[in-house]
Amino acid sequence: MGSRRSGIRGGARGGAVVIRRAEERDAGRLTRMVRTSGAYEGPYAAMVDGYRVGPDYISAHRVFVAVGGECGDGEVLGFYALMVDPVGPAELDLLFVADRAQGLGIGRLLIEHLRGEARRAGAGRVRIVSHPPAEGFYRSVGARRIGTVPAYPPAVAWDRPELSLPVEPEFSGESEFWGEPEPSVEST
Image 1 (cartoon, rainbow, N blue to C red):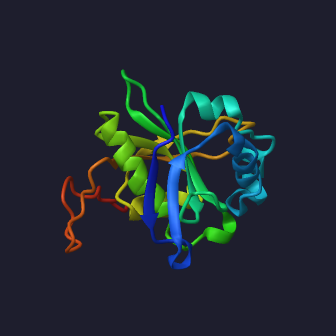
Image 2: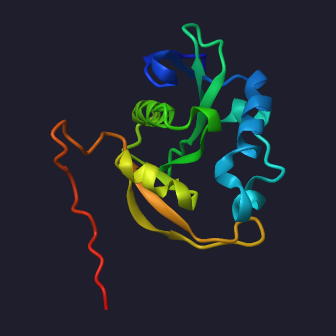
């Protein structure tokens, strides 16, 4: 696949953000972003300790980066990796936003791009096994919790939420929910 670029304005304090296909030369920056993520401190640190986003991973998967600047040659603000299996569901493998770019809308831009990429690949939904603190973000962009993935120590010592993100947003402009009703929680 070629290096498709999507010029998307927004995020980055009103500056231009370009989402482009990751290149092998991005591997070091993406690895640093994962390993230094503030979301993986404390008990979650073991999950990213020694983690590597190598050139081989980038060339084998659909990895896209959000980059500041009109030409997509600025600072890497975030990235995602989408796994598409012709037999199974599409799955979000990684999504990270640089700590200094948190709250600027970069994650939402990446999710909208991911939806388009999944749509082009023929997927109707994207499976997400979420880092527990990120579940709220994924729910805010339309994902629904469908289960829990149990821990598998020592790499992951905690259960993780499993979510499903529709490729087509299920929300209208009037904040009315379209689709299946939210599951109810009964107390005993």
